[in-house]
Image (cartoon, rainbow, N blue to C red):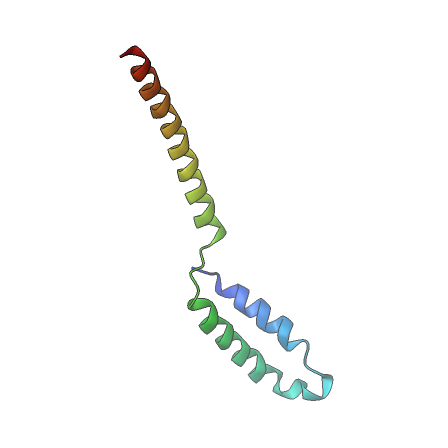
Length: 80
């Protein structure tokens, strides 16, 4: 899942783009932007960096095992 702090940071940055005269509605805008971002990101298939790194490590181990097995099969085929 995505860290909710990301939404706060993005909402704050976007709200900071509001002209000075409209700062009195800044809190409402921040809240609405945050809700919009959460809604849109929840519809995407996103993973955290930690989950991505874990899956990369699993894939690397799988590749290594596959290479070992391919080598064994090749050696067995040569011996036949």
